[in-house]
Image (cartoon, rainbow, N blue to C red; front, side):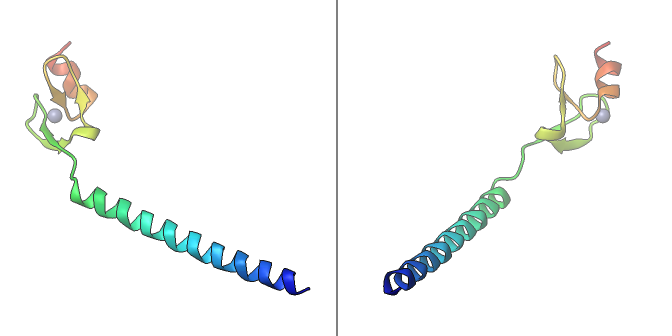
Length: 74
Ligand SMILES: [Zn+2]
């Protein structure tokens, strides 16, 4: 019975330690995401600026939409 209690306390400590560590990792990820903004690119057709991850890459550059890609590069 005594060992069961020790085991339960150990499990509780391990669980608390794990949950606090994963919280730190999440905070660090959010900090890195806010520290490194996405590169901005300009649409070759209309000139609007947008994040590189949302841009559509054409043969001669980035575009804001597939419509503008097809207008410039039929
Ligand atoms: Zn555009």
